[in-house]
Amino acid sequence: MAFSSLLRYTLYLLLLLPFTAQANNAVVNLHLARPSIVESPTNQYIHALLTQSFAKVGKEVNFIYSIKPMNKKRITGELYKPGGINLAWLSIEPSAHNDLLHTSSPLYKGIHGKRLLMINKNQQAIFKRISSLNQLKPLVGLQKQSWSDYKVLKRSGLTVNGELSYKSMIKALDTNLGDYFPRSVSAIEAELAKQKHVDLMIEPTIMLQYPSHYYFYTHNRNKDLLILLESGLTQLQQSGEFELLYQRFFGEKEKRLNLSSRKVFNLE
Image (cartoon, rainbow, N blue to C red):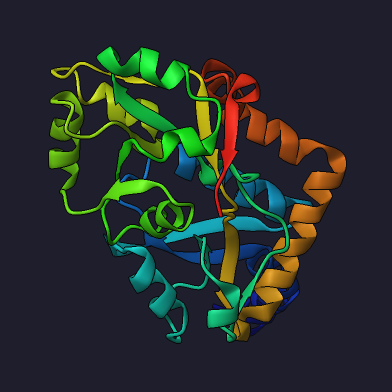
């Protein structure tokens, strides 16, 4: 290549550099923990929320997942490791993790703290007559002792059998050895659909509720990332787009399960 041609080519590359840098700066790499079901509606909601939030601040999102799925304890630990995941959506006690920062607004508007009851169809009349939490206390609830809901139910004075596996809890409902199995609003329909061989249903009148909020978390070394995300989320809320997105993924579910017309028993 002649010197003049080489010079022109070099100048062309130098002129291109600012645009290349700008393009790279416009992409945010989110290193996330792989969920057990990547294509679940919940994760699709999170993807859409992150994509739209960063778009508000002029950023494109590149999702990079861990090779293997992680549980909540593992995710929380990985946030502390340099070079590990740099963002997660969690429901944890912030005061127990002083090095982690989180966004200010709940991601699911508290839906994960709403529990409906899986019951045997032959128990419908019993639950229909219940109008207070005290009336529910003599009945036997089912919940694994290692699950967070177990402590919530016990603190509220409910009778809970925490010794059974998930499969055994389903069998206990089917054979009337347990009276009800509280499950998340976001998951109960899918869980019930897997139990076609048993005579179970979603109890239509009662909802248990307690504060349970998810936020985006990152380590404080990624403070700039969280500032961008917080700005984008705020703009989504102010424009009404956050509510539209929530309704797109959860609005029909709330209507289908009649959440607004149920008897709500607030738990501690």
